[in-house]
Length: 255
Image (cartoon, rainbow, N blue to C red):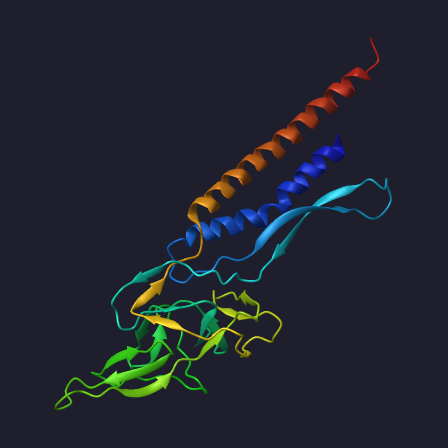
């Protein structure tokens, strides 16, 4: 009975990460450009060491690669909003100052006119550097990532001037993982590394945003399954205790 209770307790402990991942996904159902990751599952593995050859333990296995499944597009009409298509990601500066990538396209301007994300990460330009918009200029971002600025005070018909090119990469052939600040980086390369484009062309949709790719209904069902599994393991531990106590009482000598 001790082995039964031990395996049930080990299952509860191993499923802890899965519960945390599902809670994290539910918390980001409405986060712009959010990508779920950390697919987890339980597998039985043979425990080495002294004892019977039939000893197996539950152990969690996870895959932290980010699936680049595109979320639904939301038209906003805002000049600084972009939605990345297919496996396109946008290069930004992480909190540590290194190069990182994101799918978040709700851009904004800093007080000095530097283009950045809504979370404050500076947008990187192709070839290095940042993109600065002159004060008072309107901005337009083309579908290939070229950034144009227009001076409304220009006499006659205002002519847009290209002021930069967004650093866009196709990650269809490069697995990405999530960093502690919620950004992406190549899985098999050092932090801050750039990577080559894949086979798909980079593309964005202007004046639109990409919603989270988390399926709220699917995640909710998984949370319910986790809750029921937890209750089952707790009942197993309690039943093993009851059976153990009943067996111990049968072994007592009659008075």
